[in-house]
Length: 120
Image (cartoon, rainbow, N blue to C red):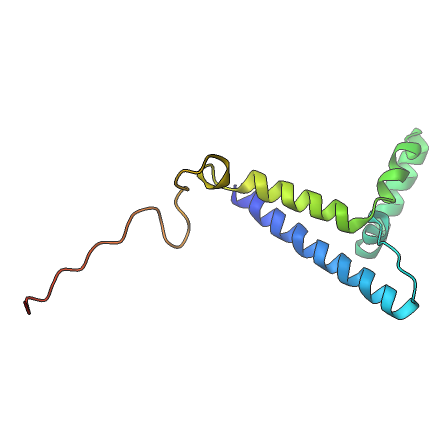
């Protein structure tokens, strides 16, 4: 569950970064364009994108891959982030309304009561 939550927060940060990139492009060029998934992949590692495209073209699957690369990054990352965060939440929080599982910091037990110092 922690892995899904971490992935969700990472995707949410990527959503914010893509939205900022869209805003800065709009500010500097005066034209609003969505950053596509193919553009993000090209910025991260262009060699793997080119290798994947040539491999798919050689095997006849390039037609199915091109629409995926044209999907806007902000909604795609946001949907994946929310889905990962929903899957990664503990069983009791949100879905059924019970008590959650133990967390890293607080745990699930109630804190012990302190005893009086005998000043009564």
